[in-house]
Image (cartoon, rainbow, N blue to C red):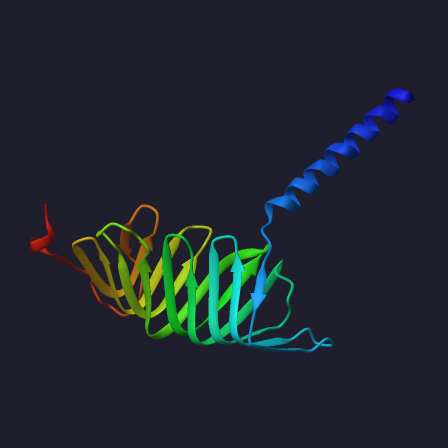
Length: 193
């Protein structure tokens, strides 16, 4: 019986340590706004001049709305100077949405004419792009440029109606779109080494 109790205690201790480490791994989320309205009955919230920060990610917008403040799963809607910035790139647009799953960004959609992207790099080989809509998939590290898309990587420019950009590997491919446009690639000979 003592052996069973010792194992039972060890099991619960390991379980407690596991959950404590899991909670520690989740970074705090900070919300700052010049004005907010919270409806305690419906959990609806709206914000003006909003800034959301978590770890190295900052989201900002003139106006924001969310149906609940539970970041385990919620969708924020932004309008007016909508921006997302992390340590390696930034995205901006007139409006968009961010979906949070398990306390971190899952997907962000930027709508504008244009929505834009730029890498934040000290070297001169900065990548940038713009389109009518940009979809950012955090888990996959992919940006999808939809509608009148143009992406520049170093000395090469890509344009089309649907471009998919792998941020980490700086790879671009043509997506599948019903617009019928081919991808166009322009290589600047002035910048070639």
